[in-house]
Image (cartoon, rainbow, N blue to C red; front, side):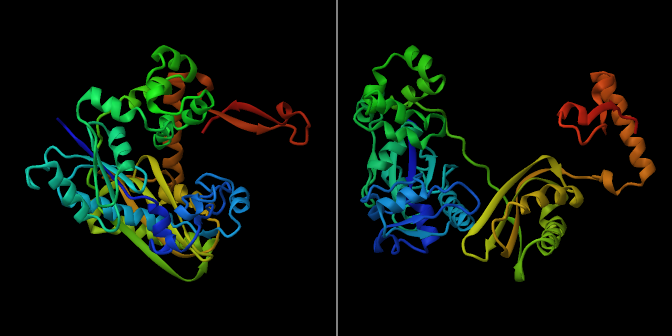
Length: 398
């Protein structure tokens, strides 16, 4: 039977941001809220959990429960780099990995047994050897069941769930419904289920499928299937090339200086020989902040781009989200499109050619959607208190 292995590194983001797991054992610590976002804390240490502090609490409530709580600046860039290194280590032993949130990953063990002693235990031993630090390993016929098994495992003792369907359902039955929080599709259900007195997965499976669908929509039957050990197949990630440019700024940069740095990174990235003429489908823009911590944003273009002007228009808007001046700016290509060929920029063309192309585009749009497909906004009474009187629409003639 096909067996899925779950790799679980507890408190991975917190350990990376803190600089090591030794800091977690020194006292109650938690990830501070990300700058410019809602004031919710991130992962917390075991000592903080003893005070009733958990991830997702508001900062004020967390400090009220644990006045000695020490906050650590989040490091999304460092977490992403460290997690990618772990994924490449797993791929190094031959695993086709489906990465989850940082600290959780899944892969099938079927084809790996011949490479590692012919047994599941050999695969688990090779997995533990490939990863650094404490790791919990769980194995089961489905992804969610493997995650539940990894939660019950110990650092030196992996947990292997039963493979038969009936035995697997009995194995899952006493586990708490809070395990559903790990799946975004059903993360809102545990609180509601506990209010109804349903605290275990076994109690959840006893509810009629139709009743769950009526109360919770599609998430209800999905949660019931997960509680019985049923799940969708794995979707391993595709191997990606690492194409990245980094710029260290001599002084903490913001505003125009930061925009110039971004322009330089885009030009460098597009000039790399490894790109081989391909357009970029998605990129990651990240920064090391002066005040401590890092910032990271992933941008997916509507269509693959190789035009630096259009890329600056998109990525320049992300710079406005930076919460503080920056010491280091990084730009990495994550997804590639087909070869760009001669990808001309509309802004770089002469005015006459640009106007002719716009006129043809408007003509084609009107032929499909009617005469109101292209309109222009005309200010009529900007000072009016009635919004409908301030502007009007008229046919646009390029």
